[in-house]
Image 1: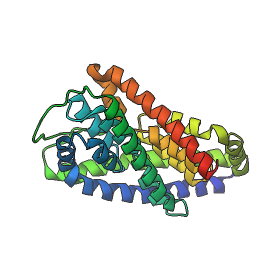
Image 2 (image 1 turned 45 degrees about the vertical axis):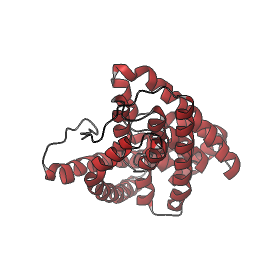
Image 3 (image 1 turned 30 degrees about the horizontal axis):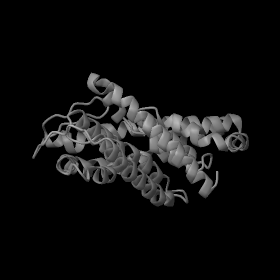
Image 4 (image 1 turned 60 degrees about the horizontal axis):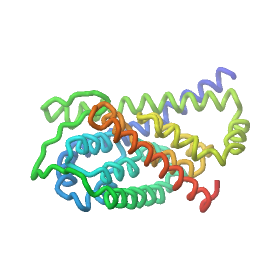
Length: 287
């Protein structure tokens, strides 16, 4: 690899990551004003909460799954609702797609529609079969949530500016590292060879993507999305990977001794659903 090629890859990674940073920061500033009201709205609607949970899960940031997991541990929402949120959430994937702003960006609309439908359908079915669920009856609950182990300070400046800036900077770092790594990988291996490898294994791509999606970190959703943007992953595989990707929500469930067993059940359900729906999408849309 020549120095000129390396410099081009580095500059491209910086440019693409900078665009994503702008989208993520703006979005998190807006979300910081509405996070608690949305949480309370979910708590008060128990019977239809999987529907609203799936809608809430569409919010593209790690906090949505963390909020859902926290509410589930405290028995404010049903297991169907937390699964609906996990299936519909995409972590930072949507913002990465918006940041790319190319022909792949328009795939946001079918992706959102399919994830929403999957979350609602599976969430309602789970609650239909799991009838005995002890749900706490509350009128109003103030929630304080953490993302990436950062504690919120009780100041407006921290909540609406500092925390979004810190979070956006971390996302920028993830995106930059992945963009640079992919650029270097393709540069060393050769774009044609890399694409040929992915196409040769395209029938296993949904399975590979769903395994990557199991990683409880926004980097996994970013990696899956970057592979799709670069044309090395089909839409069906993207769908499978993002269906099972629940950001840090899974880690919240695993950290609590009371929900460890249920966490693995939820994970298994999401993984199976992701592969079923992912492969069905591949059959319809093509691998």
